Image (cartoon, rainbow, N blue to C red):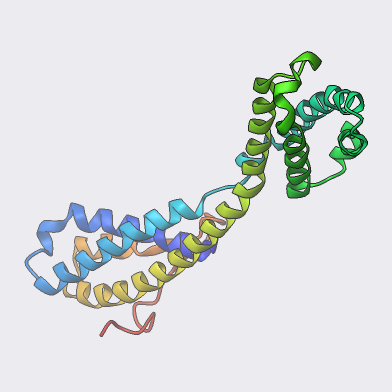
Length: 230
């Protein structure tokens, strides 16, 4: 996220607080009321977009390694007795496909692993009615499938969140651009109150503090900041 945009939103919120608190001193001027209404609406949208842009993907992947281990272990545990069933039925092809190890499966990554685990479960499912004698229960197969689905969700969710965060970042940048234009108008209108306590407090609120270097302050120029609204 662009640090300058964050700083600008912080300034906008501070300025809105000042203007709201001293509403009685400027609310008799219709044009200022109109501009302030626009700024408030845009600031609210910018705050919402900013919160959305803060979405992080790390939480979704924190337990990925644990789920991988659990899913692989559950499927391998089922494959072993089912491979014995395959031998008893003289189904060499089924036996060979189910002859997998935990180590070999763990070499696969992300969706390749999910697809392989899903395939192994699908190989077993047609024989569920005959697998009770081998210690394989339908509930065990369902539990393994749930772990695989959980793993699939963990793998795909960060991509979806990244796309959503990118969209929110783009929207946030657009809204900050709109705020710049609106504040250009408000700066000019607020000159009506210069000199006064209202104007001084307004200008102080309009100082943009660099959140990355709090000791350094940079005040925006009063003119030429952006093109005025039509």
